[in-house]
Amino acid sequence: MEKFHDKYLLLNYIPTVLFTSLYIIIFFHHLSVPVVSGDWTHFYKPTETIFLYCGSSDNVTSPDGPRTWTGDINSEYFPLHQSQNKASINATSSQQPRDVFEKIPYMKARLSRSQFTYTFNLTPGQKFIRLYFYDSSYQNMDRSKAFFSVKADSFTLLGNFSTSLAAEASRQDTILKEFCVNVVENQNLNLTFTPSQDYKGSYAFINGIEIVSMPLDLYYTTATGATEFPYVGQAAGASYSLSNSKALEIVYRVNVGGAHISAGHDTGMYRSWSTDDDYLTEAIPSALPVNISLKPNFRFIHNYSAPEPLYQTARTMGRNAKQNQNYRLTWQFPVDSKFTYLVRLHFCEFQGEIKEHGNRVFEIYIADQIAEKRADVIGWSGGNGVPVYRDYAVMMESKANQNQQNRLSIALHPAPAWMTNYFDAILNGIEIFKVDSSGSLAGPNPEPQTTTPTTGRQFGDCVYVYALYSDY
Ligand SMILES: *[C@@H]1O[C@H](CO)[C@@H](O)[C@H](O)[C@H]1NC(C)=O
Ligand SMILES: *[C@@H]1O[C@H](CO)[C@@H](O)[C@H](O)[C@H]1NC(C)=O
Ligand SMILES: *[C@@H]1O[C@H](CO)[C@@H](O)[C@H](O)[C@H]1NC(C)=O
Ligand SMILES: *[C@@H]1O[C@H](CO)[C@@H](O)[C@H](O)[C@H]1NC(C)=O
Ligand SMILES: *[C@@H]1O[C@H](CO)[C@@H](O)[C@H](O)[C@H]1NC(C)=O
Ligand SMILES: *[C@@H]1O[C@H](CO)[C@@H](O)[C@H](O)[C@H]1NC(C)=O
Image (cartoon, rainbow, N blue to C red; front, side):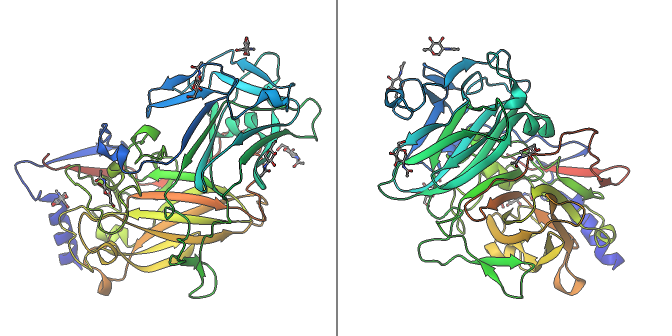
């Protein structure tokens, strides 16, 4: 065992290319891999993109993407001449978002105390629908009275939704809600905003609507029905497949161990990817390997699956094999109970030492249940530098004392010694989707915040991470 441990340390300490490599030791910090504009923004070209700046009469371009937003006033998507809603107003926010560098599409809004509908004439197929909200005061509307539902045809995307409670809970005044729905042939997509009837003086509003078409086989089961994935926590061998008739909400999209990737640096679908800092709960310590010289070899999955930088960074368990056997590298994500969630885990082995089947084998737990007893990234992908992802479904029940909120955990632990050369585990990216239940994705509003939530994080005294820069 000790011998093994030494070998492990050694391998991590001797740079493969001594003269061109540099190890940096950083404490509690993320390594910011520069995300520069590159070809990957063109990996996928959507057949349809709509960026609608609600409440605006002008067309404006936001730099990230870049995206040209069309004003909704007099646009084909909001035909006022049909006088569907003379009661709605367009307004300019009285202030600017705190954390948002770009003001578009947040500075203008459409608001109404009665129902209003946008109608989109789209090609058939799966679409991302992104709704942008800015919790601010518009004219004399009281922000705490924004309570409303949003429907996409028959799907309820948001119900009794309060932007001010959502903003308070996330401590961000801008809110982006992201969904996937399938549009059937010869049918317009109607997005309907309805103020809650339970509240006197309630109103609905929206700042921006984005619709982007998706590749057919990105998340949904393909037409051939070939893709089925494990249904964790169900009977042994149970599988799950995601049919076109389901609507999804994208609840988390994370570049594990790496930097934030903005929408404009996605593969062409304008997805943004956050860091994993807010979700990591047990890491004693963990390590942040990086290989920016890696040019991922997309021979196993489509090159638009995730941006290249996601596969150039990762989080592993750390250098201490003994310690790794005694803990699980864990992330936790707050979710609404009583929904099924689809969890996609992205992997890419890019450290030179991990070359073969059996080199780094680990266990994966989802929501405290075993999802994978023998995760072997090289075994799945076929080689170093080859990205791969794995999907799992899990049903989140409500906890006894928490009726509505639950925490979906993802945890990694080394496999038993006979299975693996290194006592370690790796993860590059996480996507978590909520699947509709009887046509609804609506969850409860977060509880009004009274105290700072305790995260229950467990880190070692000194989170000792290393980063490896190899030659350019
Ligand atoms: C992505 O893959 C497709 C084929 O799967 C290929 O035609 C395209 O050139 C690739 N894009 C880039 C930027 O490599
Ligand atoms: C904005 O763009 C739309 C669609 O491209 C166009 O029809 C409209 O005339 C433009 N409006 C202005 C004010 O330029
Ligand atoms: C709404 O749009 C109209 C037409 O562009 C404009 O004249 C008016 O000032 C806008 N209202 C507000 C409150 O911004
Ligand atoms: C969408 O709305 C339009 C007009 O409001 C209506 O004619 C059409 O039937 C609606 N389509 C669906 C699929 O609900
Ligand atoms: C970075 O990735 C490339 C391609 O897989 C590999 O050849 C190289 O050894 C890696 N560098 C290090 C230092 O692990
Ligand atoms: C709407 O949300 C508020 C705030 O979370 C909650 O108190 C109320 O019970 C909800 N109403 C309905 C009908 O769900």
